[in-house]
Length: 496
Image (cartoon, rainbow, N blue to C red; front, top):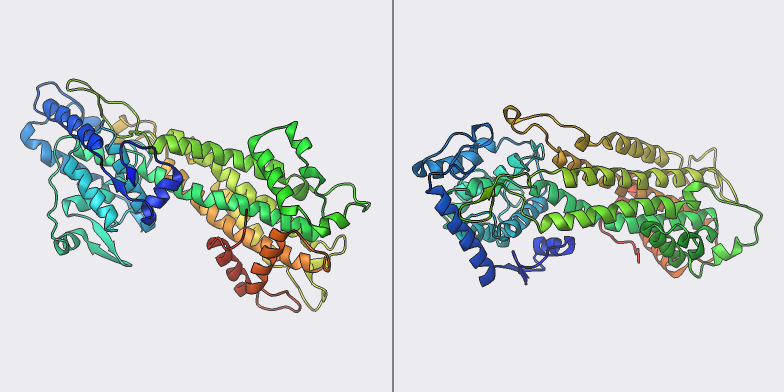
């Protein structure tokens, strides 16, 4: 069980809630917090003092006071008018994670929505009723207005749900479930659509994917080093203790583990080579820097998923602060930093692919014994080069930009939704680049037999060879590449 509004969410817990491995519940203490805050909102809504978003208009219309009789229409209009997203629908898992994070934020007891509203969202989560949310349209302040509006239109009987792979009007789905559309009351529209849950969901999904890819990049680097018959001495603990970045120390430790017991590495000890190229020798420094960025983003994401990011924040019956907790900049900047960090994993991986093709130190050129008639593995590196170039173009930081909206009331925005989407695009490209490097590394290791490798490397070599056999003569490599990408996406390779 996970107690919404009382316990701390983490990336792992959010994913578990989304997968149904963890059940989210409302405790009596949470219910009391929600009801107490709702009571404060109702007092303000019926009062004569203008309180932003409770008895006034929104954005540049914040100076227009609304009567109690108009309150419900105002809140519903808010969702309807802000549902202006465009583009393809986001992945179903992202929609579910957005709802999970929003429920947890509303249960903190500072948003002022009714318990009934939270319970309906929980019902959607538990029944896998996942709204259609277009991927484009958020500027990341006042939070993710457009995507959150689409996410919660089905509460009103508007918008659409996924039913399998079909898009079905929400009104029809609710009728089939014998559910009546809800009527929103004071503050509830704002509570639903102000917030950073679109940015946050992309961050959570990206962090989970990056966690595995960081480990896999170490495995790919170790296997390439084995194929190149490189040196393990640059990974010694003593070297990294005198420059003790957390990520660097971790990667060096992992490389020592991955190479432990390798006969192939031991055979290299007495050779006359002084040092390896940077793409092998500097794996701890480059992969480690990417890990440091990951650690930072993970820390910020955990703060955000346990925070209240709507507006205004209700503190008492007389005080509702109109602040800027919805602004996506804290995540946007770190997402852009992590886009660079992820991109660098692909950049150095491509360099290792190229290195294995050069025909040095016992390896045949292009990793084929029949060069001339056969092109061997010449061309897949073109693909890694193209993916690396694409990632570089995706590394422009959206958080460095701002286009004013809302007649200048919202004159600085984070563009964090774009940062989150680009981060995940880059990670998908990294999956493909590492898949090709692993295929190259396995081929290079063939030329180091009968030497044995470490147990974990041997096991991964076996997993690869079950899907992709050694290249003897030229063949169509597309199927091999797709088989490798599938291994990566399914997390079939052993990383620990």
